[in-house]
Image (tube, rainbow, N blue to C red):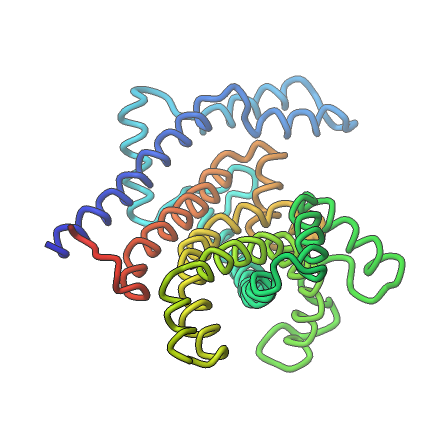
Length: 331
């Protein structure tokens, strides 16, 4: 029964990815915008532009657009994707997979690090707020995290860049590492990477910290009112054991699903952060592809984002029963 449920969940995730890719591909490929618009506009402002060159370039770029039966074109594109071929970048003529492979490790690094930091700090502070509910400390922290959570990520990123990067000059204002260090597994390069990643990681951490803390606070307060917690107190179990084994664990369980899903969604949220700090990740690459109407590169990045979100949801479904035996799968 469980194996059938597992096959059904994996199949649903696969179909979801395919349908979403097809819809995104149709909107992208058959839109009136193309890289020709951007390139031609750039050529028109130069002294070397001429009508014949513009016409030839427009005709060439139009040959890269899909022609013929849309269904056949969609199936051909899906077939290429399943074989790991995302096509060539329209502007640079470099394989899209190669461009994405260069950028994605940087995004994974700052996204995973910021999520881990914000989650660990958020659940600890949220649990403290739950135990101190109604006190001045709880009210102050609740107001603080509510304000932090309401600030858009591009605002907090710009503020950190302006204050810590430009005004105080404590951290670099952009890039992933210093141009003076040798790239490779050496200590100066690793130190430079960590130093340049502090502001992007801090921005993403602030964006997630408020949500984790407030959710953990609500879950802790709800769990403290359960009968099994009252029964444990009557049995004389120490406060430390109740806090960790009874309250903390059960209050944390609902956040597990949110954490796994947030891993996928954080790839999309890195667009603003990487653009603000000129960080060479997927987000910065997506901004470049959108501004240049580079539809093949856009689609490649969209596929990565779609797949990350769907895999996150799938992993949450498959693993939740492992951390909470009360939940049964396949029924």
